[in-house]
Image (cartoon, rainbow, N blue to C red; front, side):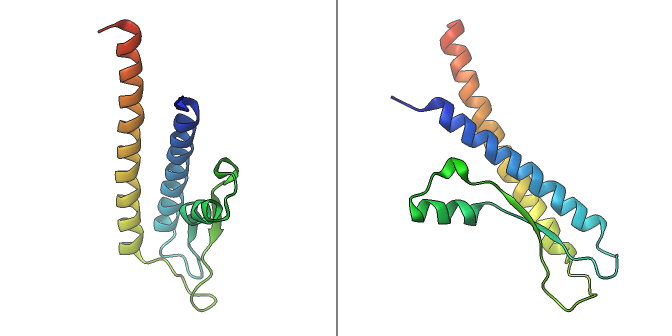
Length: 115
């Protein structure tokens, strides 16, 4: 039997992670000129990969928002082009996942309504 509920729950969680990443990137861009600002990053994919490698429950993996403390203290580490490319990648992934979820529910609607 297919685990539709688990698949849609994972897709919803991934959409939430992508939305959180977009907010972090936009926050970084807004603070690109603030002296000493250290950028935020959202870790999820690497944590999910580690959980899979260990055989742990993937549903327990939660995204982590953390500061990137790289670079000298007191120096802003936001690189605008890197943030913009990450924002573009995140937007593309969000679009793909939204379409996938929408397609799934459209198919369910067809099956139920018969149209």
